[in-house]
Length: 78
Length: 192
Ligand SMILES: [Fe+2]
Image (tube, chains in turn purple, brown):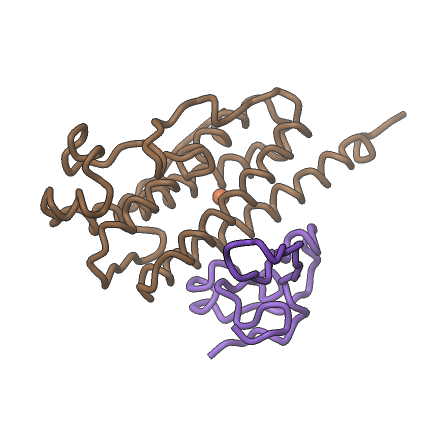
C-alpha cells in the first residue's frame, strides 16, 4: 500500500535513571524528530505520492511523511 | 490586503467515528480550545500576517485558513462523540462540569476546562520572533496529536488524527522555509 521508502528512523531513544526504590517499572523513552527538522527546506525534483495517496497522507512528499504511531520505535518492534 | 474566503461545505478530510467513547471528546477538546489547538493557530497566523514581510503574508493566510478547516474536523469529532450521550454518560466521561455550563454545545476550552485566552498567542511584530513562535506552535500541536492518538484505539479517529498531525509537520516545514526566505531578503534587493 505504501510507497514510502525505508528511511532512517524518525525516533530517538533515551533512558533515564531508575532507582531501585522507584514504584513503577522503568520504561524506555522515545521522541520524534520529524522530517521538517532534518530537512527544513524543500528541494526540487523529488519523489511524489500518487495524488489520492497524497490527499490521504497529508503530504505530497514521501520524504516529509511522518507516520504515527511509528511502525518501529528506535529499531525495536512496537 | 485583500482577503477572500471561499467556504466549501465539506470537511478537509473525512471524519468517521466508529466507537462510542465520550471520554475521547474530553481529550480532543484540547485541540479545539487549548493553548496549542487549532483556534489558537488560526487566530495567531491570520493576525500576524499584517505586519510580516510581503513574501510570507500569503503563507500565513494559507496556513491560518487551513487551521480553521482543522478546527471544523475536531468540532465534528467532539460533536459526534457527545451528541447522543446522556448526562450520565457525560458524567462518566468526566464531562459533567462541561455539561452544566454548556449542555451538548461545544466550547473553546482545553481538556482541563480552562477557557481559551488570547494570552495563548502572540504577535511580536518582529518577523523572526513571530515565525519561531509559529514553528514552536506547530511542533506542540504535532505532539498533542501524538498524545491523543495514544489515548484511543478507534482506527477511524486515528486515521483523521494522523492526517492532522502530518499537516502540522508540513506547516512547521513551511514556516522554517519562511525563515530561510527572510534570511535572504536583502540579497535579492537590487543595489546600485
Ligand atoms: Fe498547523
